[in-house]
Image 1 (cartoon, rainbow, N blue to C red):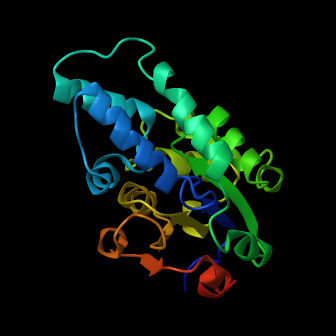
Image 2: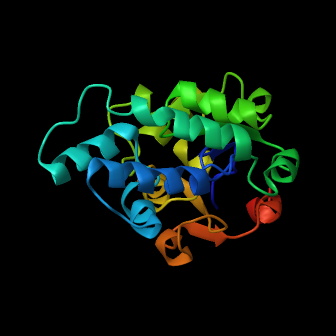
Image 3: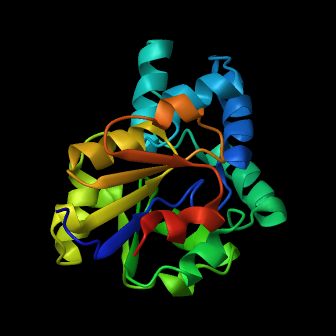
Length: 215
């Protein structure tokens, strides 16, 4: 018999807030400016779900030179302006959160500052205050299991009692590596087949999540 679910861990970007479509579009422009032209599909495949540090390391490796210390600063206004104009909760996520009877938390590759910003813009921050975890708190980002194990430890729940809601292949790989049940949200940018795998339920409508969790 499987361990009852005591904690549902949500990724942030693309799962709670519909930010990936906006960010990937701008990532393409930024990468082109830096000298690494890439399609949106290539950005999703290579970077979605990874930390900013991972992305910077890959850019440096491709360009064959280090990036300046504050290389992102000239581009930050592009993300801010787009988020403030367009960012919304993922369709159906409010209904899903209302229908989940157990404790929830957030575990994201983004910084605490970014998580607070995007959850705040969409009115979701108050739902997770005090239960937000960032990859900046652990040694290795996704697809390593460190962040999800850290969140479970802080929430005092055994990994077997955790479910992870993710929208990237690196995220579902991290959940599996942590020994947690993974739910891959295929209503975003990642192709369904990239989320499929052992111990993983793939779904496309957030409103279905409470039923799928069967809590």
